Amino acid sequence: MEWFTASGYWLSRLVFQRALAGLYLIAFLTAVLQFRALIGERGMLPVPRFVERTPFARAPGLFQLRYSDRFFAGCAWTGCAVSAALLAGMDSWLPLWAGMLLWLVPWVLYLSIVNVGQTWYAFGWESLLLEVGFLAVFLGNDEVAPPVVVLFLLRWVLFRVEFGAGLIKMRGDACWRKLTCLDHHHETQPMPGPLSWFFHHLPKPLHRVEAAANHVTQLVVPFLLFAPQPVATAAAALMIVTQLWLVLSGNFSWLNWITIVLALPVVAFPATAPDTAGAPLWYVVVVLTVSALLLALGYHPVRNMLSRRQVMNRSFDPLHLVNTYGAFGSVSRIRYEVVIEGTADGTPRRDADWREYEFRGKPGDPQRWPRQFAPYHLRLDWLMWFAALSPSYAGPWFGALVERLLEGDRDTLRLLRRSPFPPHAPPRYVRARLFRYRYTTWRELRETGACWERTYVREYLPPTRLAGPVHRP
Image 1 (cartoon, one colour):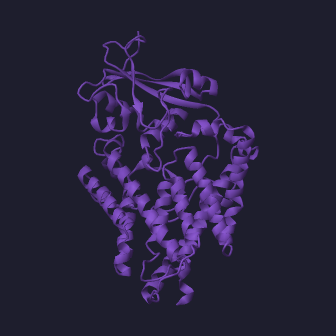
Image 2 (image 1 turned 90 degrees about the horizontal axis):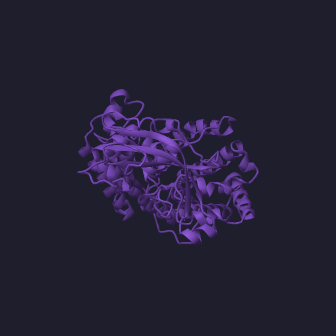
Image 3 (image 1 turned 120 degrees about the horizontal axis):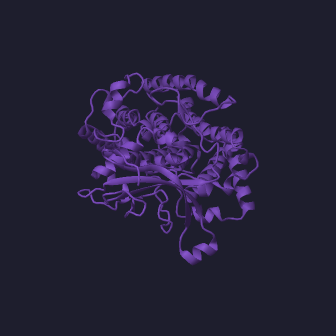
């Protein structure tokens, strides 16, 4: 069945599969290291409480059947092990059916995690990893050449990622149409990286070029993915270059990296294809059946993209088989940060010895330069950015975070860069204050060594102890 496979893309498939396995490994490792404080039995949003009120049909997964922290850790570590095996190429050593089952394991495990992850896992790149991971199950191994229809579906996902993001920008903030959004974005993005300060201080005309290039890459180039070679390869290469630029400019978890991974199967690498057997009939039937289902489900994201009320980062089914994507339809002009402090003093006066908790990635101490964390995902740091935009975003979990700090909870403190209070001697009171942050100028950087300048705005949470809020004298 020569019409069913494309032998010229065997190396593209190989590179894609190994890179995707690497992203799976990072995603599972993130879950292992953070879940206890976030969604564990004593987490801020515990899984047992969530599954009690959520039917299986709305959030299918293993943890609807049984949950314990030990079971979750076992699943996450299993995901790490299987991902590492796939990264090493174990699927190529197995029969075709066994290789497909091996790829299915991390998808089932990560789907189970995402579907109980609540707001901590409500990011577009979670659904994107699941959608791409599901397609990877049917891409085959060394026994057969990659199926044409699956290669097409991967391009279709990449098209929706880029084109959907481009549309949400053009329909959203006017600064995208005026090409001025990047005058602010590098400063106000959720988690700046080590080079973000320098990107912000690029000349404004270059910011206009950045914005215009973004529109071209997201609104024009995606159509070229379906053009004959070498045009499709050139389009994918341009997307990869654009995504690498974004990798340098900020910390966006694995969003940029999985977009790069999605572009890899489009590239026609110059290599001699190995001899492979014809695709077995059962494999053809399975792939075509699943592909027909996914194409039918694709009606929903297409309708969303064409709608004037387009939404971004939404899944249209509980299995995350087809989703819609997009980011930064609006760009903040001012950066706010919530600064959390604690004191061991018996009375929480203004002049008490308040000590600041330091987060790993989000801005805090103006002297501390941002670090590179992506593709690793610092979930608490990202949610703190949303908390600064509006307390309503933090409503479900911020009170629990403060409570854990007052208790000196070890799992919560492990999410931080530094706690001013050891677990055995937690603070008596915790408060939160809202600050406005801005990047320093070149002159201020030389004089002070600080990359940020911050100004107090207002109280975010009054001094609070385990018995409840206390008013300051």
